Length: 136
Image 1: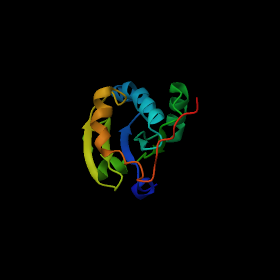
Image 2: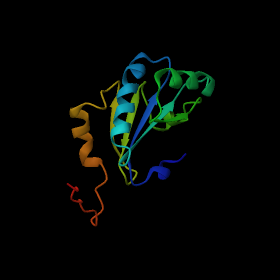
Image 3: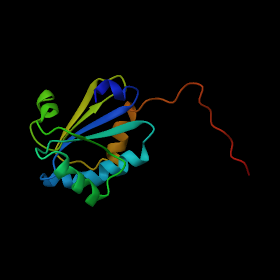
Image 4: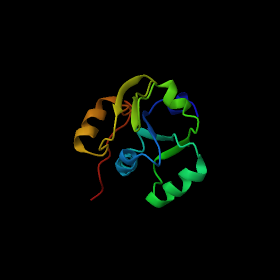
C-alpha cells in the first residue's frame, strides 16, 4: 500500500506491536473510532512485529478487531521512514496526503477531546450533498 491509496480521507497511520502494552490499551479506541467514521477516515494500523502475520493474526482475532485495517511491516520500514521514536506512534495525514500531526504514546482515539481535535482535518461533505427530510 501507498499513502496515495488513501487520498481523500483522513488517515491515522498507527505504528504498533503485539508486545507493546500501551498499544494494546489503545487498539480498542482505534477500532471504535474507525467504526464511527468509516466514510471519512481510515485507521491504518501498521504492525512492527518481526514475526509478521503468524504473530499478528492471532492477536487481531483475540481482540476482535475487524474495522481497523491491519498492515504488516516486520522490518520497521514505515517506522524508520517517519522517524518513530517508540510505539505506539500515530501519524495524522490529511486528505491531501500531508502530515498534519503526530501522537507518540497511547491515546484515547474515540474520546470527545480527540474527535474534536480531528474534526478540522476530516474531508468536507460535497457541495451538492443535501439533507433529506425524514418520512413521518
